[in-house]
Length: 635
Image 1 (cartoon, rainbow, N blue to C red):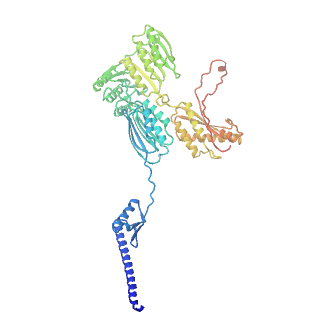
Image 2: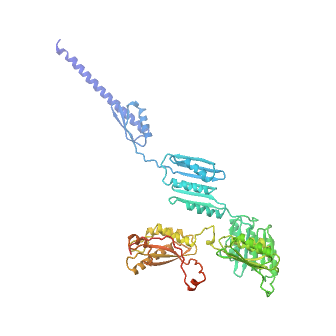
Image 3: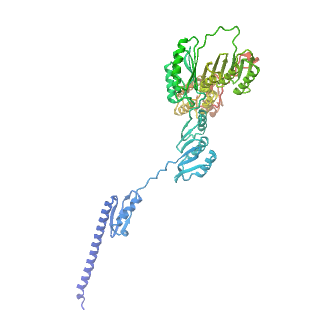
């Protein structure tokens, strides 16, 4: 057979093959295009417009940046609903996620009579079991309800410091809510009295973390006052209270308004529990206005008893009118006793007998005057020793059997009343009692009036001239003058008062130190303090003296601007005259460049009688403490 006869057949085979390949390519291209378009439509319908769809033969390639992994997988599944999932190639990226911030860890500790509850969110790495065991030991209770959740995040830097304070606080406060966090601590608690409130605050402040913001809110209930006493007087000095208490804040406002309307500029009243009637303030106001109508005298409320004593020389007709109206106006639970003194006869030749008790600032108590018999003398001395201390009482009384009946009982009442005074005196005669002195108890006058009204009986005349002195108040725990100076020097010892070279102006760092000093001195009362400026020995003597004086004055101006009310400052420059270190070394010179605080007018011990007393010399005993330093330029 000839070769030429096979050529048509071979050509036909070649042409068929080419046509098949072309058809297959066209079909694949059509399938690719159709699939790509279908997947693109599906992405748009599902809201995945950020997906780029590309065909690669029979495969569908998904590219783009997904907002998160869940959305990425959802887009891949959506494409798999249109074409065979095996044909879908996922090369999508995911947006880089920022680290999720750690939650705010905190614990709220609730303590009451039923036990302790813990609520909050704590780090997983924190040893909560050990904290609960320590909490049981410190609080003395085994009833602790742990309602805390935990999260696996790093423990905050000051977390342990906050927890330590929480353990101390919950052990101290039996009724409290303490919120602890690494950046803030809040303590809310109840105290049984004003004194306990002050003690709680003092102890907590000593334990406060320096790096954590802390807020203390400790409340004390109103005091129970017994007897419930108010005493209003009008004498030659004008109207005033010896004692004033109110049963409610509304009653307090009512009494103060009445006092102001009668001429008392700055009346003071204590709100407390124990009033005999809900109409206490109404009764007190009614009595005050009745006394104002009389013009002079006193009116004393002791629980439900009311004692009105008119001034000598009051018109009997006016007295009868006022007493009658007052009896009608007083609330039913109050019983009025009224007295119109008769003019006194001329004094006898012999001085009227007295019984006198004196309390000195040093704590010594002296009894003088007359007492009715040996048994009464022994009883009054025993009461004084019990009231003021067995080793601080000196008795110089003498027995007089002509004294009137009840003299010994009145003397004991005087001793008990003077126990409310820190320093002062009491003078008792047959018909009057006068208490004078100073006290650190704001309610002392009320207590004295209550004692005398109760012990001396209705119609008794007594005068109370007792002043409240803030620095004597033990509840406030005010620092002594020596402690004030020590605190100021301790601060500048740890944080130097710095001046820029060649300058006498305080810089920012020095201002921060002065803020701390002003805060430390805010509770100081009646303290006279010197601000001393010192230099090293470099430079001229006159120049150093002037420079130290100017810098001391700059510190003085800075403290005056901060209104340290209880301290009287004096600035003085010493120049190079009082070195505390060797001026031959740089370290010594730096120590000598300093600011020091010194106490002025400190109480001096009495000089013993003898040769030293004759010389007239004295030795200054002002307390000095840790030296402060000033880091300035070389003088």
